[in-house]
Image (tube, rainbow, N blue to C red; front, side):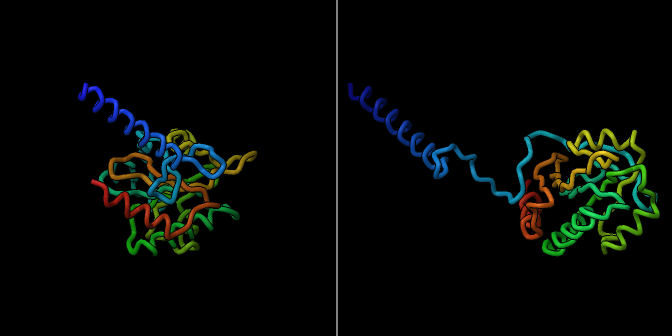
Length: 200
């Protein structure tokens, strides 16, 4: 009988803890809240690898995603003739790396292979003061299409504007944290990079 009372008491404690936890995970309106993330950006679905590719950069050197395994990578999507969001995207990247205090592998993946050329890519990186700090990943549409699909990105077309987003890829090659240009800040991205670098 004493053992039964002990079991019932234990169950009551578990139920009470669960109830309090549910209350804490609700906002002021009573709606359930997601557990707080340690990252400033949006956590991406678990287990989604960054797509591997074999393309070239603005200097004609080969770039592969698998070649960065073991390092945290920052990827964004821009095009060299862009007059709106692409400059601010790379300036955000530059501020983030400055805040971090070190450069990490940074990929500016062509969002418009119809217009991007090595010469235009070099000029664009130079204008943004990112030449030597980011690699402009180039290829034709056929070779870039799987990259867009793997990163869930809409490229630039005559009808639609490309997705102005940034993605952090962890040491194992998984997409972990995403940002839109509107909600990202340099210090937050730098802090998220440090968290991913600290993972083992």
